[in-house]
Image 1 (spheres, helix red, strand yellow):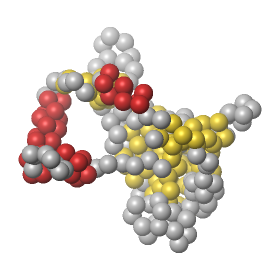
Image 2: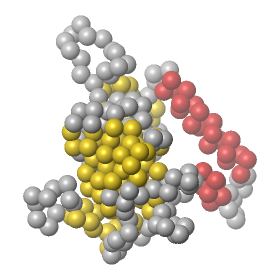
Image 3: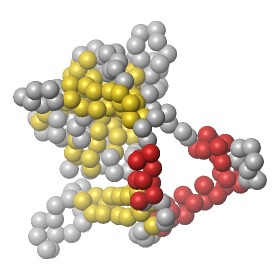
Amino acid sequence: MMNYTLYENKLTADVEDDYMARLVNVTTMNREELVTQITGPGSILKETECNAVIGDYWKQIIQFLSNGTFYKDDHINIRLDVVGVFMGENDRFDPERHELKITIQPSAELKGALANIPMQYTKPEKILPVIESIFDWGTETTNSNLTPGASLEITGENLKIYLEEDEQGIYFLNTSNGTETKADSIRTNEPKTLTLKTPQLPAGEYRIEIRNKAWNNKNLRIGLSDKTFTIS
């Protein structure tokens, strides 16, 4: 069962009754839990063996990629692509303007798993952090770009972060490889406004995620930007 709720899309104020769907009550399994499931009752496999195989599997794939070799099996297809603009035939790869990006494509079997997930609507939780607008002072644009090292202003609802807890914060999620970077320089920290310095991130596409808790509440709340942001 996958639960979802609907939130008004405040980034398109000129469109009436425009709502965005967001998944809620999502469970994320980690490596330890995966191995526990594989080695459960009735299995002849041992945890140490599984961890060793999984670890070596990914180490070898990383080695392939480090050598410029693509990888494909029955479940995933991993390839490299060059992004960025080249100014004419004589222009050459420049790390300041171009990026070698990892693309991971799921197999038909993985995609097929989605067809078996029943979807159920859940009433929205009003206390979730909601990102309404993000202004980048480096390019002076709204909801489109990010500039490493420049000031960033996030406005919305329920944004305040209690910085004494490490798990709370502002995170930049790379949409191509899944890496996340936590902002370490927050200047304004209020329920409706956050200002910070954008981390030194490589070129690519990013989404911004707010992770916080209500006062005296142990449950982590997550608010994800509806838009993706570009660092060129």
